[in-house]
Image (tube, rainbow, N blue to C red; front, side, top):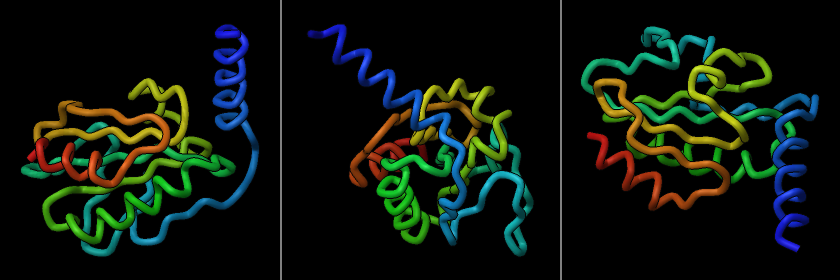
Length: 138
């Protein structure tokens, strides 16, 4: 029974990461490849000097990406002055996903101000956990 469950989970993750669909924009959060007004475009491996960074890896057709994206957007409003937020749609920009070894979406990677990965969340995550990880990266 354990093998069946593991296979089912793998199948769900595989399907969620390979479905060709459109949409899934999160307003207010910079997407990799876009430049916000007055803000230099940062490559996903770079962290703006003196700021930790949250990178949200997502893709269209990923059901759990919606709720996680809402949490990321809320945190960007609350902590946008002290943390750099970036969303990477891996269906449009797969290179950062390869660099960070992203195996499933949603994945949230938190980097400290020096660009070192300090925490990674795969799947659904609570806002408190994200906020705590960001605060510890400061």
